[in-house]
Length: 256
Length: 336
Image (tube, rainbow over all chains, first blue to last red; front, top):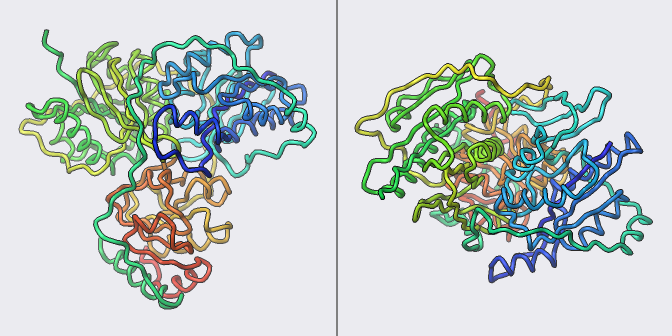
């Protein structure tokens, strides 16, 4: 079975964004403080679990980011790790981002049985890129995936459905966008594989850039919501705070 | 050459939690219509999928739109997946003469399903998807959008010139929808079009009997500061006592203390309760993006510098392990 996992990386939230925001400063910040996001990690862990269940599973990762991120991913002893330079990708424009990803995937010689990616592909996507990618690859798309098993008849996918969790019996090949789940935390890589990955190089795959269909105009820091009045702080001992808070909450319950 | 009239269409999936948002969504659509065409009353069209059991359209909503069309299909269920909903909406849009290049903005409800449907429809009509947006405006025959990015820490301004345009708009502070002088009639389309093949699907028991987040009057929510599942047991008790819904932040979901269906935030649900009780939540922009700016926040956090206190109306600097048991002793039994 061939598994393809696409990882976008995010700007590590432990670090504040630069004060002077622009596309260039954000690219530089991201390059210097890159990490796998929670949805990336979930997608990668699902790929590893598929390999745990069937050791002849081949995993290829396509990483959008710096070489350091590609090395981190390669530390999981994948069969192949490809890289795209994030600065060259218009990831705010789903159609253009998908087009660039497909350019790289077309040169890949093995058609995947399962494509895995996070439900949001990087800092600028909100879930549109997996949809576009599934359409471009002509694959059925299963969103909000929690887990997947390969079975003789195809795939058993556990996902968050509109009414709650549901199990879907699907056929491969398929594209799954993965959401976070407590039972799917990314494992720690083996030290020997991490050391081996440090010697690897990951030159970026070439892509032909086109003028994006959606134009980036500007970026600014998100404004904190404004509130009409200052916060009323409940002071005192825990007993006093609990008493005052109970009064506030009882008043909430009475006011319908 | 005269610019064709802009059409604004609100596409609804008929999900149970949408009904509580009709006023906000129609109000936001009217505001967009007024901005785009300031010299005319905003003409808002609604296409709503109507699975069996869905409530009829409320009169206040019908009075505020120029057309309301309910779409039925024998195979349409309340839990239909996004591709099925998108296929039906696509067919309905074509019946209303929307095609590639049509000067129209189609608004979907906020949330992951709305974003997915917007992307599917944009692909079908070779239009633009702007995904999850905070604001939308029309300028010089293009659509301008402001979108949260970088975990809600930044807002990116974008311009889409390819029509039609699809977006999942999170209504911010909007006015209540205004009744039109001459509202449109209610129509119903019984679709018998072929739907995408359905994969065998089995609903699983979630073990989650809590009140639904969307539409709840009060939400009790926990974050990383709860540090353990035991903390959420206390939050569940508090939620039951207050007849409230239980929510959680992204870190709490990652830790497995609360299911992903109860995640509140930019990547989770958007809630607009009257009151939001945030316990052990620091108040990141990513989380606050999931809470309406018109909601009153009550915050409990042991860090006096936590950003949540800058947006809360009532704050308590305390350790939840000391506060919550005392609080539960003082609260009266639930009336529910």
